[in-house]
Image 1: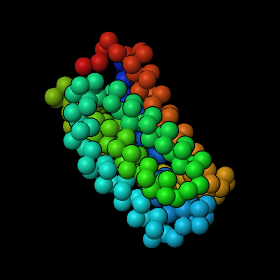
Image 2: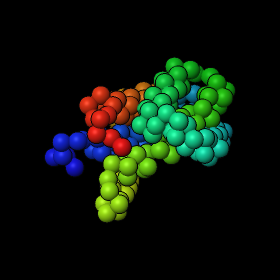
Image 3: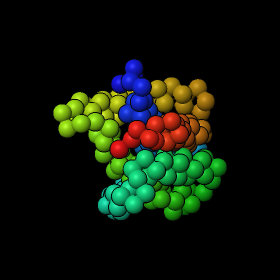
Image 4: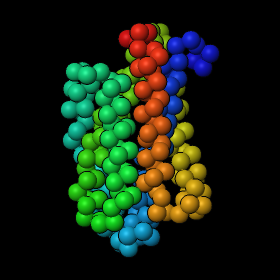
Length: 191
């Protein structure tokens, strides 16, 4: 896949890795961030993350419908970029109530990305290789979920928990960039 002339599948997998890393960092450290940066009790902040998950579930089906209208890659780009912007807003805003209000929108943007990521990966291949591409999808997504807590923990120890959302946003904007490169360089070869 790395040596293939059409690197769209590889860039898509890198995009998936970066988005999951950004989300996993927030998921792992959100309650600690709220305690350190905002002085909010862990039980209150963990409840706010529930709105993120609920919005993801509610928006899962619409995310698929949107992709049928504008395409999987473009839908994923909106998801990555929108979530990155919201995470930057979370970094700037020091009012927890505002974060609670905006958290469901972050879940909706995550649904736009996540619901369409696996279908995009397998759209690059033939029926005979779907198992291989499925394995690659789960390898990249699982690897991101595995390495993020320890690597972001080290980063947060170095730069401070106040920068959690900045680091997560950077991951999401890199994810967006990989998807943008696919459109710029490989659009003609995509299904």
